[in-house]
Image 1 (cartoon, rainbow, N blue to C red):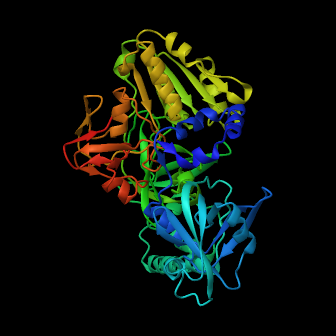
Image 2: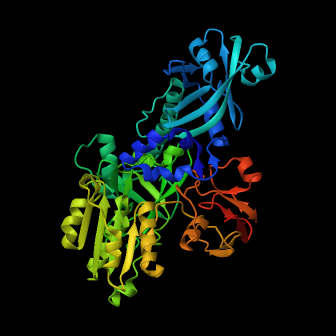
Image 3: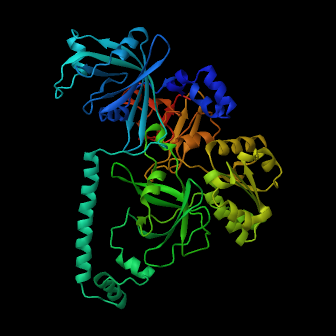
Length: 566
């Protein structure tokens, strides 16, 4: 689906610059199909109603832009409907420059900031003025609790909006917000002190407890053991699940990638895993809710003492106004943090039976996609199976485990650094492999799609193309269903653990997609028959109920089948 903001902002000159800087290809998909991102959903409406200021730019007859800051009580920028917002011009806060500019050019650009949660919404629209004698429309933008007299009002008819990356937004807090944070910390601190007093007052049951109590009561400053750390860690774990882990190590692998080492809270051997397994770790989001995030266990699968994951801090999820779980994890996880989580699962395992029969493996990793590939290569090496590998990234400094893998696998693994104009030739890697080779690959969607496309061109069986994407995980209670494609005259069977979108892609159905998390509308299609179960956060009520639009990347069906206009 097309992005309306891109249609307006991407002029011919802008496109030329994108082309010159090799980013044009990534933006082209935003410019095809029906217009989207010009109707406010409830998410945008709530965001706007919580703001107490915004920045507004108008254009004068001379062509110069004029930017002003507008402030008022929270919610003074009113949401009139899905396509219209407005605000009142109060006495004492008059802006004649903007008002004059709007007479000759009704175009306007707004930026709304949420510094606490690092969110930014950009809006493009056209302004119409509400005069003082237009009481009906003035009533739409007035705030009853604000006593200043209204001189005029402005309605902004939205042409497009876009959420921006939070990377360089510095969190800022007002007095009320800081008080809310410190009050919560003080309450937690009081509860922890009470738990500690109760624990120390109990009769020690062993020497370890006696030593720990002595440290606290007599201020013993000698070295503390890991067992005593575990004993003293009386805070309730983050999350729920049968596996209790403690963070015992944190390493900065690259400027954006951080490795977290987990061990058993009780010092016991960890559950046995195979290469490709992942952990579902809990993360507390800004709304206070605990969400699960899936991360590959990238440590050697033969180890039972430790699990290690590598987490890329990125603003990608935030570009559409959603909080990033990876960023939250970077902020929250610290040494001594205890988590409770489900047992590891594995949906990207090595085909060991084929390799035992002599089939070699070819591994391809792009960026953070090295996490499962690293463990897989270590497993292949320990079993003395034949394999080769390819690892591509921006630069050696930004590629996790680069130096270690270079030492460990020497001539078996090739590296490609885009800052040195080194590019992986995927067609050559696939074509030159043995006829029975199994390909394992992980990384950005564009890399995976390119490998699948070339694999199809070369006639490689899909059974030999094994991959993992970083995207939405299907709900564990989801049921298998049949998806009927009206225009294609096909029926696709979707397993319980697979998203509808991935099933369509696997069946070579041409569908557009981007985030694969239900946030961007790129994969939107129309439902013709069936009972959709909407799980996205992007579509408005009108788009769902009246236009019958549907996001197959995350949504399912309450019925056993659903018919789509594809």
